[in-house]
Amino acid sequence: MNKKKLEKQIKKSKAILKDLSKNYWAISTAVLAILLVIILISGGISGTTVSAELAGQKVLTFAQTQYPDAELLSSIEEKGMYQVILLLNGQEAPVYVTKDGTNLVPSLIPLTAKVTASTQQPTQTEIPKSDKPTAELFIMTHCPYGTQAEKGFIPLLESFDKADAQIKFVHYFMHEPEEAETSQQVCIREEQSDKFLPYLREFLKEGNSEAALAAANIDTVKMEICISSGKADEYYAEDSALSQQYGVQGSPTLVINGVIIQSGRDSASYLSAVCSAFNEAPEECETLTLSSAAPSPMWGWDESGSNTAAQC
Image (cartoon, rainbow, N blue to C red; front, side):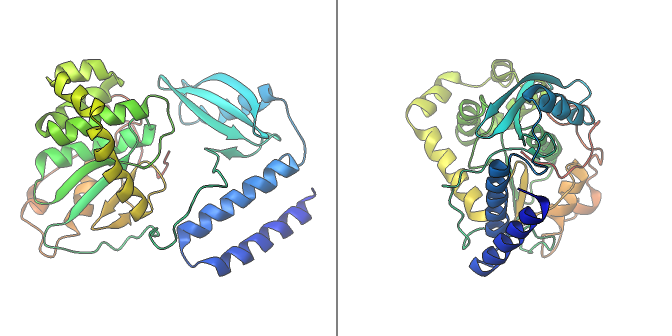
Protein backbone atom coordinates (compact mmCIF):
# COMPACT_ATOMS: atom_id res chain seq x y z
CA MET A 1 0.00 0.00 0.00
CA ASN A 2 1.59 3.31 -1.07
CA LYS A 3 1.68 6.39 1.10
CA LYS A 4 -0.91 8.38 -0.89
CA LYS A 5 -3.41 5.54 -0.80
CA LEU A 6 -2.84 5.10 2.94
CA GLU A 7 -3.41 8.81 3.60
CA LYS A 8 -6.59 8.71 1.52
CA GLN A 9 -7.95 5.78 3.56
CA ILE A 10 -7.14 7.52 6.84
CA LYS A 11 -8.90 10.74 5.75
CA LYS A 12 -11.94 8.78 4.63
CA SER A 13 -12.06 6.91 7.96
CA LYS A 14 -11.86 10.13 9.96
CA ALA A 15 -14.65 11.72 7.89
CA ILE A 16 -16.97 8.79 8.55
CA LEU A 17 -16.17 8.75 12.27
CA LYS A 18 -16.81 12.47 12.58
CA ASP A 19 -20.44 11.89 11.72
CA LEU A 20 -20.81 9.03 14.20
CA SER A 21 -20.25 11.01 17.39
CA LYS A 22 -18.99 14.31 18.69
CA ASN A 23 -17.48 12.59 21.70
CA TYR A 24 -13.69 12.90 21.73
CA TRP A 25 -12.87 9.56 23.32
CA ALA A 26 -15.21 7.59 21.07
CA ILE A 27 -13.67 9.16 17.97
CA SER A 28 -10.04 8.79 19.08
CA THR A 29 -10.47 5.16 20.06
CA ALA A 30 -12.19 4.27 16.81
CA VAL A 31 -9.63 6.14 14.71
CA LEU A 32 -6.80 4.33 16.46
CA ALA A 33 -8.47 0.97 15.86
CA ILE A 34 -8.87 1.70 12.14
CA LEU A 35 -5.30 2.93 11.83
CA LEU A 36 -4.09 -0.29 13.43
CA VAL A 37 -6.06 -2.34 10.91
CA ILE A 38 -4.54 -0.36 8.03
CA ILE A 39 -1.05 -0.84 9.49
CA LEU A 40 -1.60 -4.57 9.93
CA ILE A 41 -2.84 -4.98 6.35
CA SER A 42 -0.08 -2.90 4.83
CA GLY A 43 2.74 -4.46 6.87
CA GLY A 44 3.75 -1.09 8.30
CA ILE A 45 3.60 2.55 7.25
CA SER A 46 6.58 2.29 4.93
CA GLY A 47 5.55 -1.07 3.45
CA THR A 48 8.97 -2.59 4.24
CA THR A 49 9.63 -5.28 6.83
CA VAL A 50 12.50 -5.64 9.27
CA SER A 51 13.37 -8.65 11.40
CA ALA A 52 11.89 -9.13 14.86
CA GLU A 53 15.40 -8.79 16.32
CA LEU A 54 16.02 -5.44 14.63
CA ALA A 55 12.57 -4.15 15.65
CA GLY A 56 13.28 -5.15 19.24
CA GLN A 57 16.60 -3.33 19.21
CA LYS A 58 14.93 -0.18 17.85
CA VAL A 59 12.36 -0.26 20.66
CA LEU A 60 15.11 -0.84 23.23
CA THR A 61 17.12 2.13 21.94
CA PHE A 62 14.00 4.30 22.17
CA ALA A 63 13.18 3.05 25.70
CA GLN A 64 16.70 3.70 26.95
CA THR A 65 16.24 7.44 26.37
CA GLN A 66 13.86 7.34 29.38
CA TYR A 67 15.07 4.19 31.15
CA PRO A 68 18.87 3.85 30.71
CA ASP A 69 18.86 0.41 32.38
CA ALA A 70 16.11 -1.00 30.15
CA GLU A 71 16.71 -4.53 28.81
CA LEU A 72 15.27 -6.40 25.84
CA LEU A 73 13.74 -9.72 26.89
CA SER A 74 12.13 -10.89 23.65
CA SER A 75 10.79 -9.81 20.28
CA ILE A 76 8.41 -12.08 18.39
CA GLU A 77 5.81 -11.82 15.63
CA GLU A 78 2.28 -11.70 16.99
CA LYS A 79 -1.03 -10.65 15.42
CA GLY A 80 0.62 -9.13 12.36
CA MET A 81 3.04 -7.03 14.39
CA TYR A 82 6.06 -7.60 16.60
CA GLN A 83 5.51 -7.96 20.33
CA VAL A 84 8.53 -6.62 22.17
CA ILE A 85 8.93 -7.29 25.89
CA LEU A 86 11.24 -4.97 27.80
CA LEU A 87 12.47 -5.09 31.37
CA LEU A 88 11.89 -1.65 32.94
CA ASN A 89 12.84 -1.13 36.58
CA GLY A 90 12.53 -4.85 37.22
CA GLN A 91 9.11 -5.21 35.56
CA GLU A 92 8.19 -6.74 32.22
CA ALA A 93 6.61 -4.21 29.83
CA PRO A 94 5.12 -5.59 26.60
CA VAL A 95 4.61 -3.23 23.63
CA TYR A 96 3.94 -3.70 19.92
CA VAL A 97 5.83 -2.30 16.96
CA THR A 98 4.87 -2.26 13.28
CA LYS A 99 6.76 -4.70 11.10
CA ASP A 100 8.70 -1.90 9.41
CA GLY A 101 10.13 -1.05 12.83
CA THR A 102 9.05 2.60 12.73
CA ASN A 103 5.85 2.86 14.82
CA LEU A 104 5.35 1.92 18.45
CA VAL A 105 1.93 0.81 19.72
CA PRO A 106 1.61 0.53 23.55
CA SER A 107 -1.25 -1.99 23.33
CA LEU A 108 -3.69 -3.45 20.82
CA ILE A 109 -7.32 -2.40 20.93
CA PRO A 110 -9.70 -5.31 20.18
CA LEU A 111 -12.21 -4.44 17.45
CA THR A 112 -14.85 -5.98 19.72
CA ALA A 113 -14.21 -3.36 22.40
CA LYS A 114 -17.24 -1.23 23.18
CA VAL A 115 -16.97 2.55 23.35
CA THR A 116 -19.87 4.20 25.12
CA ALA A 117 -20.02 7.74 23.80
CA SER A 118 -22.72 8.81 26.25
CA THR A 119 -20.54 8.19 29.30
CA GLN A 120 -17.00 9.02 28.18
CA GLN A 121 -15.72 12.55 28.58
CA PRO A 122 -12.85 14.56 27.14
CA THR A 123 -10.03 15.70 29.38
CA GLN A 124 -10.79 19.15 30.77
CA THR A 125 -8.67 21.79 32.45
CA GLU A 126 -11.51 23.81 33.99
CA ILE A 127 -12.29 22.19 37.32
CA PRO A 128 -15.92 22.22 38.56
CA LYS A 129 -16.26 23.66 42.05
CA SER A 130 -18.04 22.29 45.13
CA ASP A 131 -18.08 22.74 48.90
CA LYS A 132 -16.17 19.47 49.40
CA PRO A 133 -14.52 18.27 46.19
CA THR A 134 -13.99 14.63 45.30
CA ALA A 135 -10.58 13.73 43.87
CA GLU A 136 -10.09 10.23 42.50
CA LEU A 137 -6.75 9.03 41.15
CA PHE A 138 -7.24 5.98 38.90
CA ILE A 139 -4.16 3.76 38.52
CA MET A 140 -2.87 0.27 37.76
CA THR A 141 -0.74 -1.27 40.51
CA HIS A 142 2.23 -2.08 38.24
CA CYS A 143 2.06 0.74 35.73
CA PRO A 144 5.27 2.85 36.01
CA TYR A 145 3.32 6.09 35.57
CA GLY A 146 0.52 4.97 37.90
CA THR A 147 3.01 4.30 40.68
CA GLN A 148 4.66 7.65 39.96
CA ALA A 149 1.32 9.40 40.41
CA GLU A 150 0.56 7.48 43.60
CA LYS A 151 3.81 8.67 45.16
CA GLY A 152 2.79 12.26 44.45
CA PHE A 153 -0.80 11.74 45.62
CA ILE A 154 -0.11 9.90 48.90
CA PRO A 155 1.36 12.93 50.73
CA LEU A 156 -1.83 14.83 49.84
CA LEU A 157 -3.97 12.03 51.29
CA GLU A 158 -1.87 11.98 54.46
CA SER A 159 -1.90 15.72 55.14
CA PHE A 160 -5.08 17.18 53.63
CA ASP A 161 -8.51 15.97 54.75
CA LYS A 162 -10.74 18.78 53.52
CA ALA A 163 -11.54 16.98 50.26
CA ASP A 164 -12.79 13.45 49.62
CA ALA A 165 -9.66 12.09 47.92
CA GLN A 166 -9.01 8.44 47.11
CA ILE A 167 -6.86 6.12 45.05
CA LYS A 168 -8.93 3.87 42.78
CA PHE A 169 -8.29 1.34 40.04
CA VAL A 170 -8.83 1.51 36.27
CA HIS A 171 -11.16 -0.96 34.56
CA TYR A 172 -8.47 -3.07 32.84
CA PHE A 173 -5.17 -4.82 33.50
CA MET A 174 -1.98 -4.80 31.43
CA HIS A 175 0.68 -6.44 33.60
CA GLU A 176 0.66 -9.99 34.96
CA PRO A 177 0.64 -9.31 38.75
CA GLU A 178 -1.96 -6.54 38.63
CA GLU A 179 -5.18 -8.49 38.97
CA ALA A 180 -4.08 -10.33 42.13
CA GLU A 181 -2.44 -7.22 43.59
CA THR A 182 -5.52 -5.11 42.91
CA SER A 183 -7.67 -7.61 44.84
CA GLN A 184 -5.34 -7.31 47.82
CA GLN A 185 -5.17 -3.54 47.70
CA VAL A 186 -8.90 -2.98 47.25
CA CYS A 187 -9.62 -5.23 50.25
CA ILE A 188 -7.11 -3.36 52.39
CA ARG A 189 -8.50 -0.01 51.26
CA GLU A 190 -12.09 -0.96 52.05
CA GLU A 191 -11.72 -3.15 55.16
CA GLN A 192 -8.44 -2.00 56.75
CA SER A 193 -8.44 1.59 55.56
CA ASP A 194 -6.12 2.92 58.27
CA LYS A 195 -3.41 0.59 56.96
CA PHE A 196 -3.87 1.29 53.24
CA LEU A 197 -1.44 4.17 52.91
CA PRO A 198 1.24 2.52 55.10
CA TYR A 199 0.88 -0.55 52.86
CA LEU A 200 1.29 1.55 49.70
CA ARG A 201 4.30 3.40 51.07
CA GLU A 202 6.11 0.10 51.60
CA PHE A 203 4.81 -1.54 48.41
CA LEU A 204 5.99 1.37 46.26
CA LYS A 205 9.58 0.92 47.47
CA GLU A 206 10.20 -2.27 45.51
CA GLY A 207 6.82 -3.73 44.54
CA ASN A 208 7.21 -6.36 47.27
CA SER A 209 3.71 -7.25 48.42
CA GLU A 210 4.80 -9.62 51.21
CA ALA A 211 7.09 -7.00 52.72
CA ALA A 212 4.31 -4.41 52.53
CA LEU A 213 1.80 -6.71 54.24
CA ALA A 214 4.22 -7.22 57.12
CA ALA A 215 5.32 -3.59 57.39
CA ALA A 216 1.72 -2.31 57.51
CA ASN A 217 0.67 -5.07 59.93
CA ILE A 218 -2.14 -6.19 57.62
CA ASP A 219 -4.59 -8.77 58.93
CA THR A 220 -3.90 -11.25 56.13
CA VAL A 221 -6.64 -13.66 57.26
CA LYS A 222 -9.22 -10.90 56.94
CA MET A 223 -7.77 -9.92 53.57
CA GLU A 224 -7.88 -13.49 52.23
CA ILE A 225 -11.51 -13.88 53.34
CA CYS A 226 -12.31 -10.66 51.50
CA ILE A 227 -10.75 -12.09 48.34
CA SER A 228 -12.14 -15.64 48.56
CA SER A 229 -15.66 -14.48 49.45
CA GLY A 230 -15.94 -12.35 46.33
CA LYS A 231 -15.99 -9.05 48.21
CA ALA A 232 -12.81 -7.98 46.44
CA ASP A 233 -14.54 -8.43 43.09
CA GLU A 234 -17.48 -6.32 44.30
CA TYR A 235 -15.22 -3.52 45.52
CA TYR A 236 -13.25 -3.55 42.27
CA ALA A 237 -16.45 -3.60 40.20
CA GLU A 238 -17.39 -0.25 41.76
CA ASP A 239 -14.03 1.25 40.78
CA SER A 240 -14.28 -0.27 37.32
CA ALA A 241 -17.76 1.13 36.75
CA LEU A 242 -16.63 4.62 37.75
CA SER A 243 -13.52 4.35 35.58
CA GLN A 244 -15.66 3.57 32.55
CA GLN A 245 -18.28 6.17 33.45
CA TYR A 246 -15.64 8.91 33.57
CA GLY A 247 -14.05 7.73 30.32
CA VAL A 248 -10.70 6.83 31.89
CA GLN A 249 -8.29 5.78 29.15
CA GLY A 250 -5.01 5.38 31.01
CA SER A 251 -3.15 4.98 34.28
CA PRO A 252 -2.88 7.43 35.93
CA THR A 253 -6.01 9.53 35.43
CA LEU A 254 -7.08 12.24 37.88
CA VAL A 255 -10.80 12.89 38.20
CA ILE A 256 -12.01 15.88 40.24
CA ASN A 257 -15.72 16.41 40.80
CA GLY A 258 -16.46 13.90 38.06
CA VAL A 259 -14.26 15.50 35.38
CA ILE A 260 -10.91 14.26 34.04
CA ILE A 261 -8.23 16.84 34.89
CA GLN A 262 -4.63 17.26 33.77
CA SER A 263 -2.15 17.84 36.59
CA GLY A 264 1.51 17.49 37.38
CA ARG A 265 2.35 14.34 39.34
CA ASP A 266 4.10 16.05 42.23
CA SER A 267 2.31 16.58 45.53
CA ALA A 268 2.16 20.36 45.22
CA SER A 269 0.43 20.12 41.84
CA TYR A 270 -2.16 17.70 43.20
CA LEU A 271 -2.83 20.02 46.15
CA SER A 272 -3.25 22.98 43.80
CA ALA A 273 -5.66 21.06 41.56
CA VAL A 274 -7.82 19.94 44.47
CA CYS A 275 -7.80 23.36 46.14
CA SER A 276 -8.99 25.00 42.92
CA ALA A 277 -12.13 22.83 43.09
CA PHE A 278 -13.49 24.41 46.30
CA ASN A 279 -16.21 27.04 46.30
CA GLU A 280 -14.27 28.54 49.20
CA ALA A 281 -10.80 27.12 49.62
CA PRO A 282 -9.85 26.18 53.21
CA GLU A 283 -6.94 27.81 55.02
CA GLU A 284 -4.75 24.73 54.46
CA CYS A 285 -4.65 25.51 50.75
CA GLU A 286 -2.49 28.51 51.63
CA THR A 287 -0.55 27.17 54.60
CA LEU A 288 0.20 23.56 53.60
CA THR A 289 3.50 23.05 51.80
CA LEU A 290 4.04 19.89 49.77
CA SER A 291 6.91 18.89 47.50
CA SER A 292 6.92 20.20 43.94
CA ALA A 293 9.49 17.61 42.82
CA ALA A 294 8.09 14.87 40.60
CA PRO A 295 8.55 11.30 41.90
CA SER A 296 10.30 8.73 39.75
CA PRO A 297 8.23 6.18 37.80
CA MET A 298 7.85 2.61 39.05
CA TRP A 299 9.57 1.69 42.33
CA GLY A 300 11.49 3.84 44.80
CA TRP A 301 10.69 7.08 46.55
CA ASP A 302 13.39 9.28 45.03
CA GLU A 303 12.24 12.49 43.38
CA SER A 304 14.07 12.10 40.09
CA GLY A 305 11.15 11.97 37.66
CA SER A 306 9.47 14.52 35.46
CA ASN A 307 5.84 15.63 35.19
CA THR A 308 5.21 13.60 32.07
CA ALA A 309 1.75 12.98 30.64
CA ALA A 310 2.63 9.35 29.82
CA GLN A 311 0.14 6.66 30.81
CA CYS A 312 -0.25 2.88 30.65
